[in-house]
Length: 425
Image 1 (cartoon, rainbow, N blue to C red):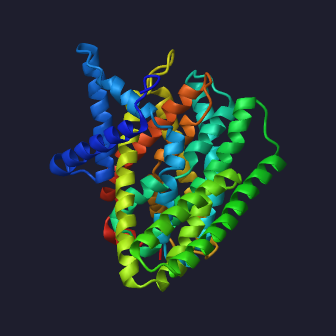
Image 2: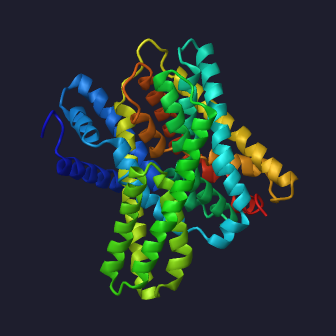
Image 3: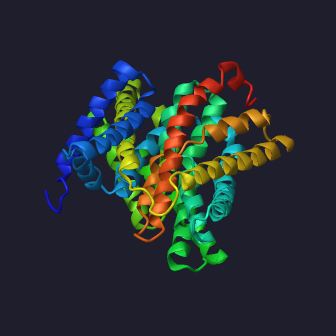
């Protein structure tokens, strides 16, 4: 242990052990949805320890601090977890259904993310100003960028258990898998403006956007060609497993080093692998791979939600600001911006005859089901130290907790199977 931090293996062991205990408690006693239960229990456990520490100092909170600080959340999520989550999630999306809903998915993922980013930033800027909290427009837009995208990890973990009709599942999956890459691009643009205090030119922003998106898509196709070639020639389960894991990790790493979008590259590779490669594999080869990836998905999500739960409670309150005001402003701004954006896109496509949808019902589902999670946290934590970083962290954590716990727990109660079936025809 150096500098007060646990060594990597000990930190991972602690995280696995705590996740296992909390998972057992949730399954045995609370019986909440697995991901929500883990986040809630982690937050409650950490909060309880903080209160107990004030009465009987025990060092338990210090241990949790060491566990969370032993990982770089940005690296842990964006490099160690997200690439595998995105690949597995995109593999299960049907190409035929995605093609049928392509306009809705593309509008939501690209235009919708950009519009929501700007609307959220504007609403947060106005709300904080009215509340007497100092923040520049560039900082508010930066928050809009890091919180605009629905998180694929949270969305796929919770919405996939609702039994959505195939069309709706494809829209939700497709948007959440694509828009995180778009949000990261906007985050890159606005982060530079907020840190330097100068505005990025439209040409510069457009250049970054095109390089990240088009470059990421091209990398995804190249990565899929490697996966396709090697998987069809693999004769054992072990080889196929190593090929899939190694190719995904290397693809994401290569995209990062070439300054193109790793998430978009992974999603493209996963879509092509699931629809063009998996269909040519024998069931004897595919079945154990499918089982492994499903298990890996569940384990990584469990670890991530526990990790997020610790971060939510361990963050320090904002000095000199009424507790809860920035959080309420952020939650209201995110929900309102999402609702306006989705209703405009769904209503416009419905009026043009591109889709046939219940505009209000679909807007309600995509707004309340637009969950935020680890991706937004990772982006917020990755910001350089500055006087306004604590404000960003507090608002981001508030939105994530409200999104996963409140929206996640109430979503299934709001939509019956009959109502879901009539939202998109």
